[in-house]
Length: 111
Image (cartoon, rainbow, N blue to C red; front, top):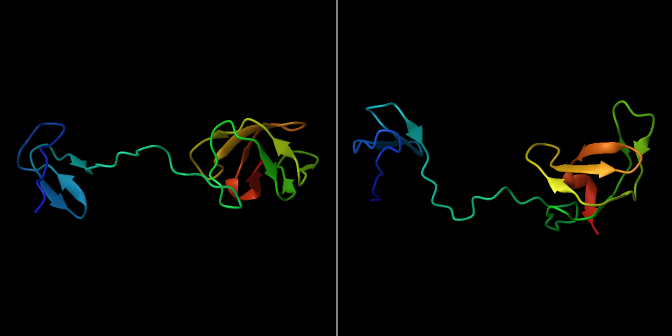
């Protein structure tokens, strides 16, 4: 049996576990015990499965339509110095000829 920690808000020793969460009956606080050493952001991979990092250079693998723009980002366009962010479009970058852009990692490959 694992030991249940005290409540981080009120330090109550009466906390209990309920469906993966710890609950404090005195203050009503609910929390999840995290003992993971790697609490960094999720791993972002390109279309080929290579791990991407901030500052990498990537290539677009298919033509991408851009809302509000007259043209599309063509296949083979190189994008330098990417920045990884949270969300559906997880690459923040600047594309030559288009300006600041958010891309999905599934449409790029690492150079």
